[in-house]
Image 1 (cartoon, rainbow, N blue to C red):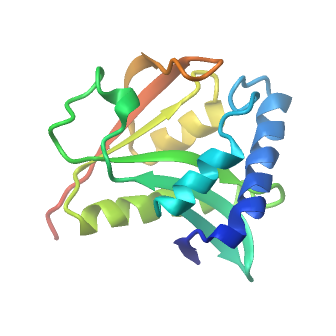
Image 2: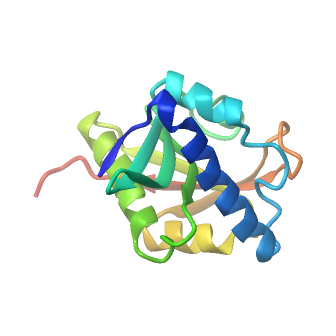
Length: 169
């Protein structure tokens, strides 16, 4: 089940982030290796009702932030006049990877976009994050450009986009 995150989920959400940090460190990906994303960032996502969790028998096994507001970090890179959705902070808990849960989280985000008649979804990731790059390529996302996120220690990110069809067949 995927649902909006609640304040009581914060510690469990952050533990999923720590799991992902450790996995990325083990394969030499310099993403999430500093404080970002912080516990406060996840708290803010919950307060703004952007944070979602995937649960199995009440255990949080996956997280995603789904942002409908324009992403200020992208302003100089994309056309912000069109509506779009941005996915951030996608992670799966240790012991639950490679089971298709990240695909389910992204499909959930796509369904939310379609319900709001949004045709574009953006995701950025570290250039060396091959697991995420393979996932989003498999899901139909296309590489757009290399961007610079100045607030991160490891600033370079690849921006990817997926165009959704609003027509019903």
